[in-house]
Amino acid sequence: MADEYSFDIVSEVNLQYIDDVVNTANKEISVRFDFRGSVSRLDIDKEKNEITLYSDDTGKLKSVVQIFQSRAAKRGVDLKAFDFQKEEASLGGKVRQIVKIQQGLNQEKAKEIVADIKKSKEKVTPSIKGDQIRVSSKSKDVLQNIIQLLKGKNYGIPLQFTNYR
Image (cartoon, rainbow, N blue to C red; front, side, top):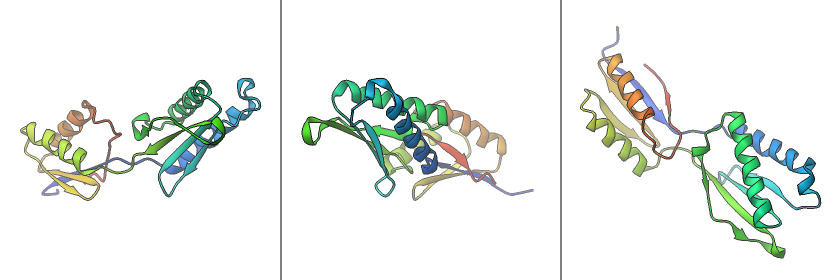
């Protein structure tokens, strides 16, 4: 039996799923009647971790956003993983919107999660390791309580629990 059990808290999104979402959304836009003759499309930049949505006007851009969100939900991608920026004017009177893909836990969120874990008064030791948090304890039950506590809170990012030991 192990002396100490642990798990990691991460915030990751599978970029292949997002690529599939962008491709299916572009396919839907290309066959929809209300987008005939429109420049509406989605482009993904995997290096920058962002998606750019283009359209003719604000109304069509909102429809593109709605298509993107519904396709992401159907694919099982948590919508909290996307940070929608303000729409901006593009060349030729068109509009675009950048959607940032949130990968990893930033320091502020990690500190907030660690503070919530410490407030729970459970006998665990959370530690921030880069863009993830390792939580360890002598009891599996206590770790399961921490997981339930964190699932009940909304941090604005998707949380996954991995590396159970």
